[in-house]
Every structure is written in C-alpha cells, then in structure tokens.
Amino acid sequence: MPTPTRVLLYEDNPDLRASLSQLLAGSPDLQVVGALGHCRQAVADVERLAPDVILMDIDMPGMTGIEGLRRIKAVAPQVNVVMLTVFEDNDRVFEAICAGADGYLLKKTSPIRLLDAIGEVRLGGAPMTPGIARQVLRLFPRSKAPVLANEEPVGHLSAREQEVLGLLVEGYSYKMIAADRGISIDTVRSHIKKIYEKLHVRSMTEAVSKALRQGLT
Amino acid sequence: MPTPTRVLLYEDNPDLRASLSQLLAGSPDLQVVGALGHCRQAVADVERLAPDVILMDIDMPGMTGIEGLRRIKAVAPQVNVVMLTVFEDNDRVFEAICAGADGYLLKKTSPIRLLDAIGEVRLGGAPMTPGIARQVLRLFPRSKAPVLANEEPVGHLSAREQEVLGLLVEGYSYKMIAADRGISIDTVRSHIKKIYEKLHVRSMTEAVSKALRQGLT
DNA sequence: CCTAACGTCACATGATGATGTGACGCGGCC
DNA sequence: GGCCGCGTCACATCATCATGTGACGTTAGG
Image 1 (cartoon, rainbow over the protein chains, first blue to last red):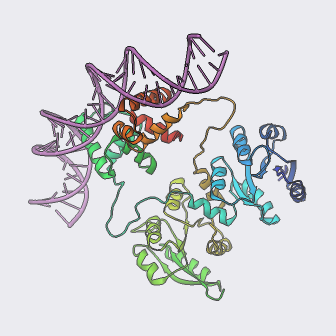
Image 2 (tube, rainbow over the protein chains, first blue to last red; image 1 turned 90 degrees about the vertical axis):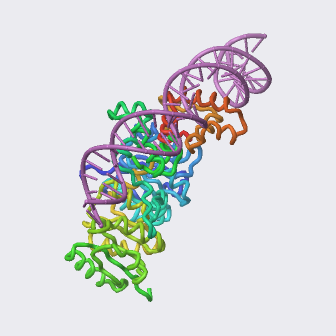
C-alpha cells in the first residue's frame, strides 16, 4: 500500500495508550494520527485527523466509547471503528454493534492479532475475538418453530396472503387493499381471516406485529 | 486432546465431499464420523454418529442445510454446526444464524483456515469469513436516534403514550388497554388520538408498524 | 377422477375503532 | 397569573373490522 492506514486511538489509560500507540507505530503500514484519552470531541477529531481506522475503548471518562462511536458513524460511516475493551458482556457488545461498530476486540488480544485486525477491518472484515463472535451470533432471535414430527408451518402463508399482509403492514385498510389489488372487499376479508388463522392472531394489530417481528413480509 | 473431535460432514458434491473428508482425516485431532450427501435424516444421523462438530453445506437436494441445521439444533443444541457454502447473500446468512449456526464459512476458505475453524468453534468461537462477519454486524438494527444536528423528535411521545403504544403493538384492543391500566376507554381513545397526531398516522396498524420500525416502544 | 388448497365473491350481525367536541385538575414556564 | 402539555373522562356518530356461513372456478396431486 503506498499510503499507510491512518489509525486513531482512543484509550483513557495513559500507559496503555502509550504502549498501544507504540505498537501501532511499529508497523510500516500504519500511521498513528492520534492517540486520545477521551472522545468528547470525537466528531471534531475525526474531521481533523481523517483516520481510516479507529480503535475505541469503551469505558472512558466523560463520554463512553459507544456514544463516541455513534456520533462518529453519524458523520463518517465509512471510517472503520473497532471497539477495544475489557468488557465482554452481552449488553455492551449489543450496544456497540447497534451503534455501528465494525469490530470488537478484547484488550487481552495479542498484539499480532490486533495488527491483523486493522488489516482485516480495512479489507471489509469484522475482527472479533472468538467469544465475542459467538455472542454476536447468539444475539439473533432463535426463532422459527423448530420442527418436530408434525410440520407446523406457522408462517406458511400463500403468495396472495403474504401480499395482503404486506399491505396491512403498510397501513392499508380493507377498502384500500381491495382497490389497490382490484378485488372485492369481501375477498380481502377472506384472505385476512385465513391469515389470522395461520398466524394465530385475532386482530390486524397482532397480525402486523407478528409480521414485522417474524419478517413474514 | 486425548479424544479427537468427531466431525460430521454434509456436502452433496461427491468430489468435494471426498476431498474435504480427506482433508479432515489428515488431521490427527479430528475423526470424521460421517460424510453424507444429504441431510434428510439429519436428526437420526446426529443421534447415531454423535458428532462434536458438523460442517454443513446449504444447497443440498431434498433438504437445505439450513433446515437440517434447524432440526439438529432442536434436538442437539450442544453440537457445533458450521455452515460451509458458496452463498454469501444476506438472506441465507441471516437464516442460517437464526437457525442456530455456530459459524459460517465460504467454500473458498483455505484448508488451513477450515481446520482452524473447527478448533475455534470447539473452543466456543464462531468462525466466519471476514466478509460474512461484517455482514452479520450489519444485520443488526442501526437504531436509536443518533444525536445532535437535526433533532427530529418524530416520536416525542409522553410516557403514557409510549405505554399505550406498546400495548397496541402487543395486540391489545382499546378495551383491554383500559382494563389493563385501570383507566377509562375514553382515556385510551384520547391517548391514541394524540399518538396518531404525533406519529402522523391514521390507524392502529400504521401506528404499530411505525412503532416497530422505529423502535419507539 | 376426486380432493384439497387457493383465490374469488356475497350477505348478515355485532364489536371495535376513528373523529369531533368538551371538560377538569396538575404541574411547569415566562 | 395566565398558557400549555399531560392525563383523565364523557357523549355521540359514522366507518371499519371480526365472524359465521355459503358458494364457484381453477389448479395441482394422489
């Protein structure tokens, strides 16, 4: 790479900040454009330093790294932000990811892996420690009626039914659906009744809720 | 490790199945307990062969690997299942993860990385190719009103209003909400009317839809 | 060929939601 | 000391939805 990757580091512990900074600076592909102790001016920092990659501690005085991340992603989503912290609890991981984190490493990560991670995130990857990666997968809804012998295709809606359900979700009334699809309002009723039976619901709101939550549309 | 990791492989292509099988067999830590071309009897296979780790192709005749995964996880959630496929599209990745996948690798993954991955998943990790990992993070809801700049408090609902909206989303009717909160049904009407105004909607379904999509609950 | 599932339509009745108007007490703000 | 938003309640009217029952043509499958 002709131009080295510009790295910005946020870490409130001065010793750790210094040693990380030194580690990064030791790599010819990297250029440390900043090593800061807090992210209260995160947005300004990013605009001024134009980093490609940010290593962000979570627990910092004044503003958490997650809030900093959120703000950075709001103005510069193309910057790759890797969280680097001691916390491994579900909530923090979840929050960080929802805020737009591109990676999540623990501080116990080896220096070599850390340098690898910066390369990985630059190439469109998402460096995570193995335990975090597993947690992330577990954060997804374990949905769908498993299976067991009798097939219970809870969401086995016909094409037309899915279509109608989709319109319900959009806020259409029976009348509007009928007009939109050029069918009778009684036909709409008929479809919706079947949808209710299949989804085990008794009202439009429940159907909409279930549809959105289970991604049946 | 005194006892080698028992690996079960599902892959419909005979050639690839053979070469993968050979690769795995070449590792002293691994014992290939099966190499099958379809997963129609996945549950029986797992009970019979008692694998520790399963490598599962997605596109197989008769039953997709995702369906097989779902069934396996329903009866043996402790078995680590790594999806191994050519597909990289969001939907398949999402489906696989929701079905309980413990890892997701592409077939272009190098043999060495593949063997690594089996060790990683055994140790509680979640092996993923970099691109998949990034996709997975992106699958999370980019939620929460970011910050500063243009504050558009579309959802500036009062506490009570949020409460009522939450019940609507749960499928409650006016009457049920009134009973649940010990207030008059006319009060419920009043709240809902204000909610409609604030959310710029004209029906319960629209309100529910907007609430769920914007995470106002 | 017969059945099942789908998509279509009709009629009827009771329950529920949408909208309008008005009112009262409370607490915060200028 | 008003003004405003909130939370509460009431009455009234019309529109919409929920439910039951029944029916017809088409298509795919056993």
